[in-house]
Image (tube, rainbow, N blue to C red):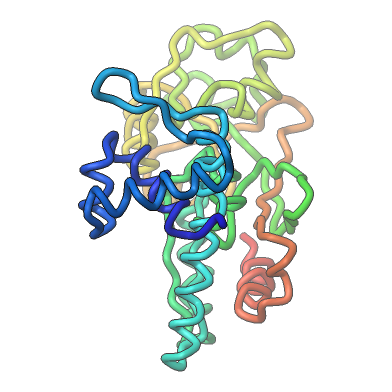
Length: 295
């Protein structure tokens, strides 16, 4: 009754906004598309769309089919891609989603030996899922998710691969540079530079500033680590980063690295994957190598 073409049609109509555009995208005539969906509506006994002027609005049943399409179609596309690779004698493709912006440099150090050890596996790093990759993992858009904030849910597994400390980075000429440890109130007059992430997902806010009711004088966002730390080195603000990354940049920029509070902020990087795929050899090999390559 419900076939893949029905799911594709509903998803494409939602994307394109019209039957005509969807039919063209799917290489169908509009009459064939309409006939296919009309037949399905007759079989299930309920309409999937209602016409509103020149547009279409999904019914409750149509919204259900759309949600099903958005969940199932990526899985089918992944399965077909894997089967094509097997047929061509290839091992597979490893798609890695990044939910940890500063971890990109760490990832490069893991990818190089992995490619050497697994020459028949392609690696694709997708950063468009930064700070929101859980849906991509559940939706089969990525195979591994690099994240400091695992969300343990049925069907997913998160493996810790290395520990690190979140620290404050200031210019070497900054008044705080002589301090070994910084207090939350000492940032009340500072410009805090972070990646473009919601404050509720920034450890310097959730684990350092907000518990004491403090906030920086200004908060500005910068996407790239290089520019962020050039700004810090130039005295334009302070930033919170993993210690290993801060020390790496401190070798070539005039920076000082300070502990956030007496106990510091301890974090872990995890690799998330779907439980059903944890026995896939090239996925397991990447996780093992990532643990060995901890910084």
